[in-house]
Image 1 (cartoon, rainbow, N blue to C red):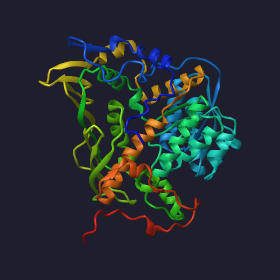
Image 2: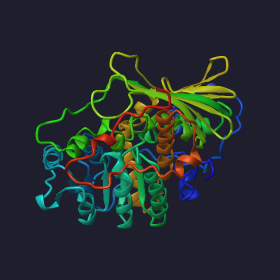
Image 3: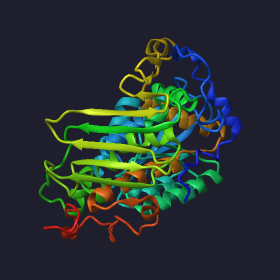
Image 4: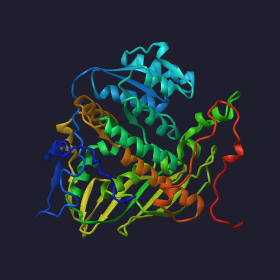
Length: 447
């Protein structure tokens, strides 16, 4: 497999070029002189249109698979992004999740979902997709997303896939194959890597592609914060029910937090560079986590085929310093997401995202809403737009880093992408599990 990303080659050049100028120079402030050599020519990479709201058009029926916090949030974002959208079907394993979401949608948006369009169980995703929806939000625990995307695509349904979109090598291969099928069917598939729809990141991406920092030579990416939520086991919960309700702490369901959360930051670097890493070496450990079988910190050295190295550092421990950001070094300067500024090698600011100009030009600045604006626009325009392959590669990069830390070995892209790693249990039912399989990984062979 080539280490160079397929930069949405399925988009027509005219569509990409037409979108390239829509954010406007009013958002940019630059005191650089001369014309730098571009990393890639305009029209060879995708720039989203980011109006405040999606265009009007035919009414669309949407379904939601996965009625947890992110699923409810995504529904709110979709309905804020476009008019003429009706939520017509819900699916989740647990009835209480369904009822909470029905209540949320009715109270906040005045839309009432009939009981016969609310589906529970592990096959609820099929029933939602078969209910007659045009589009579906997939916000289940990540391990299920490849299967749900595959089924939606087979039925010609447009998908929004929350990130990450796979947790193992088998899921990655399913995503990549399904992305090709979605492209062939002319579907719109947007993923939850919302930085691709955040104005400051998009404008930064454009300036980096224009060559303002020169050739990319390395970088650092971080997601360090306190502990995330967890669920203590309740009386009457089976092994499977507890694990799914506590999914963010179990590696088979979430992929561990280097994949589930830190994928955002890894994705920013691979997006800017236009390539995936070819090997990973790293460390990680579990020190404070209360439930599950995951680590709570990772430090990974990613190497790319050009010899570039990216350091990835993520941690979820209370009482430690926080940092969620990306830094990219180039041959002529650097970019930092903390202030969305590009500096030359002496530290002088060459360009910085103009927040004040953006505030005057636009009223919608929430990237979680804007990613749905882009999704709906492609659907209503009848344009194929599939982000799944790129996000699949970002997800596999996180998986590769995770396995490097778990095993203590250097893991290559070719090894990982061809691996038989499959986290899905043999049986999906709300019952007893062999919990001896779910232990915290220990690298190496020493005592």
